[in-house]
Image 1 (cartoon, rainbow, N blue to C red):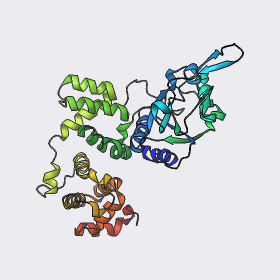
Image 2: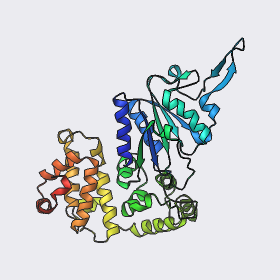
Image 3: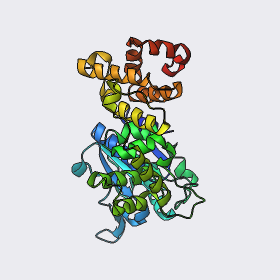
Image 4: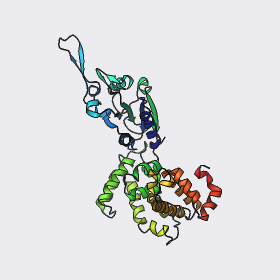
Length: 359
């Protein structure tokens, strides 16, 4: 599944009061932790993030000490765990790096997940437990979960998906256009980690975010410092391609000129990818629209111009990519607006490609 689907699975539990622990397994840097924090923000839950690979079993299970007359033992509860008085009634306990921590730490976490308590500490009623980790073939530290512990989780395997990352993260959070344009042209560059590679530097959604941060400060790709910093985040080979692509794309046509019919549609795939990405970005507000009637006249006209622009692209293959990107923003609204279009190219295209709209 992709990150969006994983997010919806977690939200389902929280919105329906199902306190089943959920475990998401995926490659490093794909945004697993970030999506849990997004859920917390959206649903009003405080996220308590425990990086288990950096903790000891005592930090999870607490410290044993004798009572006053030394006839029984008691537990000092860990301060890092959710506290209703301090953290509120709505919390998400995020057990991150659970497949990278020592077995003894996993055992300490096991009781917390199984019984929702450890020692004399009990998880607050409103706490939901989410575990995150890497898969065995992700070329990272991996310690297999014991069967009884794994059995306590609802387990999901998360794959890297460019469209989900672009629409749910990159556009809403303002990732630099250079990054989006390049990855729109080469989606496989979003995550380049390989178990066969000896390089310590590879591209991930997390490292592309760092590249975006650099470019927001200085986007001069003729500056060797900037180029070297980019290479230090995504690898030298990928950085070389990235810089070459952006430098060769600087003379591409503008979205405004194309939408206003001042220039013809490009035929070069790189130029088309950049143009299509720019048009879709122009109507990213569709993600927050419930129905067509809630669109302002200005926004509705903007969407109509983009739809016309996508159906004017030089080949049906380019149009299909553009339509799919639009549908990713808001399938029901885009479908209705496509049907309402008076552009004869739309009717001609839909004679052979109605499957794109699920019809």
